[in-house]
Image (cartoon, rainbow, N blue to C red; front, side):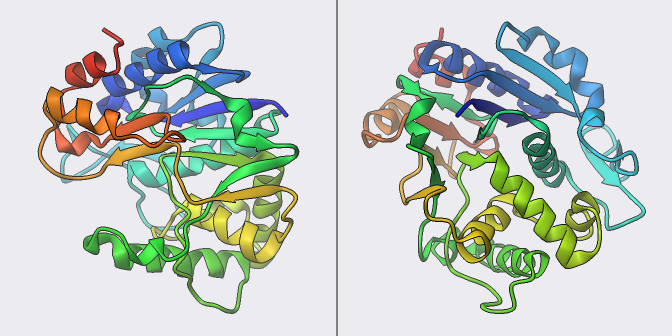
Amino acid sequence: MRTAIVTASYRGDFERCRLLCESIDRHVSGHSRHLILVEERDLPLFAPLRGPKREVIGERALLPFWLRAFPDPVRPLRRRVWLSPLGPPLRGWHVQQLRRIAAALQMPEEVMLSCDSDTVFVKPFDVARLRTGAAVRFHRVPGEAHDVIPAFAEDHRRWSRRAGALLGIKAPVETDIGYIATCIAWRTDTVRAMAARIEKTTGRSVMAALAGDRALSECTIYGRFVDEVEKAPAHHRAVSRSLCRVYWEGEAMTEEALRRFVEALDPQEVAIGVQSFTDTDPAVIRRVAELA
């Protein structure tokens, strides 16, 4: 089973994405290629990251013609908004999800490892560890969806309800299972089956259905499909530990604090994620990850 690594990124995360690429080149083995998915205008910026096993792909090769990016009228110099005739305006993080799904639908590889651009691998990792025979690692944590940062708890409920509606799941309306991680594996045949189910349920193309509402979590849709629709235990191996430990919120991490964070990783955790909005200096991450 071939495995491709996929990262949806944007210009604000370029330096962090460069760190991810360097850490993959140093620590990760067994993958066929690494795809970086960006908005068309960001192609020249990300072009230097291309390499023998790394491609930079513009979203026009992935998304339908009717979904287009424009400057945000509120903050035109800093933010983008994606407009379509089929749904509300979408933000960058919504469209990054659509790119990942589109990439999974198109790629010939059997497994996709999705890594956020603020992920950095700090230990050796062979992607063969994602598989046990034909079963692919499946991130699934009962109760986690409600045991999150309080401000996002209702978002998780909305995402779960929308996933159920897209997949035609009548009951339960929502679940408390957490499916979201910043470094996560998908089977591409499962993604294709998920897309077909969404199209059958909604009567729309999968992209039109997904872009029709801003309550969107591709990990939750995939997770509920695996658990409640596909029901093929031989295809997936459920795990409750992520490959990546994430620093979600708080003050910018000092070098000492980040070293302690890395030292505390569990054996199965091979990467760290330091959210960009914590304003942690990428140079600090580079030194701690020994990429300097």
